[in-house]
Amino acid sequence: MKSRLALVDCNNFFCSCERVFDPSLMGKPVVVLSNNDGCIISRSEESKALGIPMGAPLHEQQEVIRRNGVKVMSSNYTLYGDMSARVMTILREAATGMEVYSIDEAFLELPENFGFQEARALRAKVLRWTGIPVCIGMGETKMLAKLANRHAKKNREKSGGVFEMGEGAEAEELMAGVACDALWGVGKNLSRRLAGLGITTVLEFKKADPVQIRKSLGVVGERMLREVNGTRCLQLEEMPPDRKGVMASRSFGAPLEKLEELEEALAHHVARAGEKVRRFHLWATRVDVFLQTNRFQKGEPQYCPGAGVNLTQATNGTAALMGIAAKLLKKIYRPGYKYKKVGVMLGGLVGAGAYQPVLAFEGVREEPKVDIDKIVDEINRKLGDRKNPVITRGSMGNRRLGGAWRMKSGHRSPAYTTSWSQLPVVGLGKSGAKRS
DNA sequence: TCTGGGGTCCTAGGACCC
DNA sequence: TCTGGGGTCCTAGGACCC
Image (cartoon, rainbow, N blue to C red; front, side):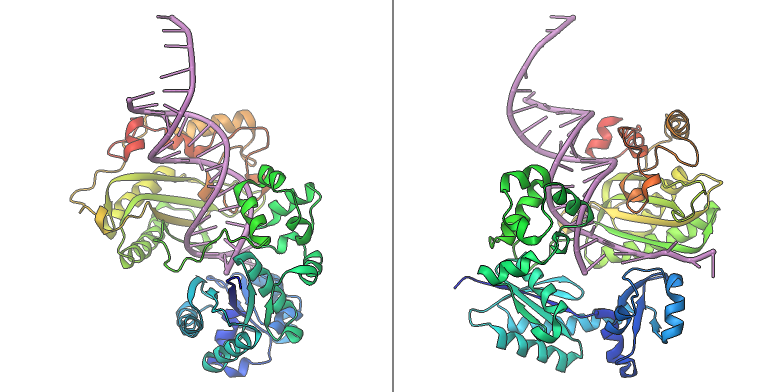
């Protein structure tokens, strides 16, 4: 018998946690909000039935919420973390191996005799001991277990919250009725690319030509294809690898314009990120700072710069990090914009072996010899305009920006960040130093 | 008026080295 | 003055996930 995996996923996890601590919420529509109470990030079944979409801005749903008496909760991550640990403890006992995949999900390596009955029993146990309902999907690979879990969830009454993705005609029939973008790892973009190849269902994907998939979706696509066909490519990671970076950022309720105000917010984020890094017993060798204007404000001039430095020595001291971050902020700050967000990313994290104490920090580059603003303005003048600039900063700032903000197609990225990385630098890491 | 905050992996291309 | 190929490391950016 082939070894099998299960994906155990808590149902509407944040809402379920809130219900454990306030049973009066049972049976009522509930939503939990994101950090600034801005978006809806968890919905109970009753809320889903009302048509409230995942990730919707709260203000767009106020009418539905008022009419239906939806209970609205701010998020409480301490509570969710605690509940998560309880669930994971129970799951671990049932498995021969386990990977905690997220706060509300875990992959389990199943014992040979673990079947439907055992899955149902495990589900009941978690519910009884923690109050959290879960669904369990089983299969030979992570992707198949994910797919099975999705099916278990969608057909909860029929499946009893448990489903195994088997082989043969029955499984294929099911796959024929599921769209590609239901696959783990297939988002909007890849499903569009698959559609271009005439592949729209999971079954069509399963039977696709590996060479063709490799060519148009790369190794990621090929791996998914093999996984769907029962070959394990994604292994169970029982020991989570060390974190590579720690980010801290927040949107402001009202936009900020002054450098001093941004500095204050940034200092707070640096302290938070630094604490987290120290908690993992790690040290940062890179610091990035970024700013964002309000991307939803069409017509407002947008500016989303970022800058970073590699450090000569690993550090996790708040004071040193704060100094670096403040200098980076000064570099990218330009007056006249309404900033909606500031953030810091502590990257290149290294373990204790690589640690060297920082005595005096010298790792910030000198004043640029190139006038970045001038270059940016010049390029924008040639290729775009102020309201619709051609360049902005790179990945950090751009990650959530809409179409108008991206590079216009046809222009190869003369990215803002590229200019930064080409600046003469002092006391940087290897590659930075080479450029000076 | 209000519209989250984190993370990961892969790839392409440049810099650099021998 | 012109000529090569192979390899590594790094950064930026794209795509996806919870």
